[in-house]
Length: 218
Image (cartoon, rainbow, N blue to C red; front, top):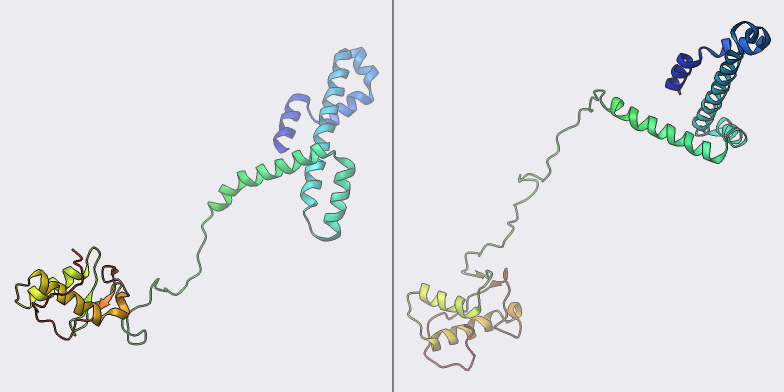
């Protein structure tokens, strides 16, 4: 609206001169010509439209105020402005706020001093021992199942680690002993073990040549 006032003043001159011209229209028409009277009337009309828009913008802004002042502004805006002009005024205010926001955000903001808080609790005496993401095998020789492993592989590797050269029958017997020792963890199907399960080694891990009906899980 301020820019509109500047443009109107440059094109039509101050509104006071237009009022003076219209007040003495006959003399101005006789001396300068009737076109000066017409231009003064057009300029005054433009100033009236500008004043109406400025009033609507002011009432639209004041209608957001709480209490009786805001209520009065809302009533006056409905009386003075049609719905379309009220909408245009609200849009103009919104555009003004959007344009002014980058200027306001450019001002330096001093953040309040706050104590540094770690994102994750530190491993100190008060927080207790740190828990690993993956369970480590304890000292009793337990085995933590890794992805892709089966009970046959685990039993065979344990026999080989003990210095034996196990046959298929030896491994099958060891698989049965591993399953028996960890039935509560593995469940009813020895072929189905899951990564992360901790398996206890059987009490007797020596190779045995006794055939066992358990099918191979290789």
